[in-house]
Image (cartoon, rainbow, N blue to C red; front, side, top):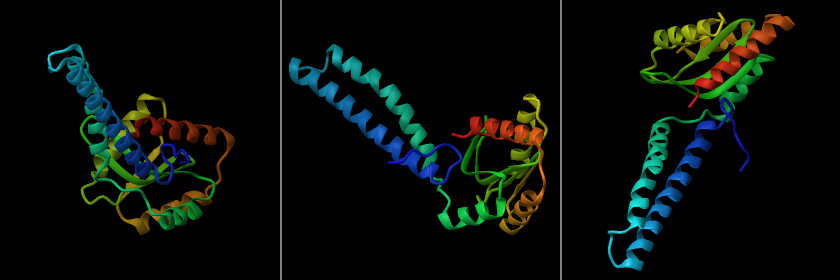
Length: 189
């Protein structure tokens, strides 16, 4: 399986599979430890039972992270290729789950170019005002001030992406855009 990194197509899909496998292996190891202790001593009151109980803590952490990803889906290749074609040389991320203190913000696409961060979210309960304020605050704390706009209308988003792709950018702004993109990646689950 080819590795997929944060912001790339099918990131959510691959993470779900990876975390499901880790959960399964973790619970199999816990069961094996417990059964080994039980079968060798004839009782559940042994050190291996304690190890199995303590081993359930990291397994539970992986289980929670798996269930957090479960309701979200990766983008289709067709839609991704359409946005990629329109974005030109802009920085493009997809399959983004922005993790905040209060909620998870499932953002389908983010395009970064010339000091602008343009996002699209198709989730019906997406809070664009909260997302824009959260991102603006995070970037301000890190010394950046990109113009942030999150769209819930796909056509408006695609129009804005086309406008951003047509903008000329210099080397200094390209470096800021790269830093903006790197900071965004730190927020993704």
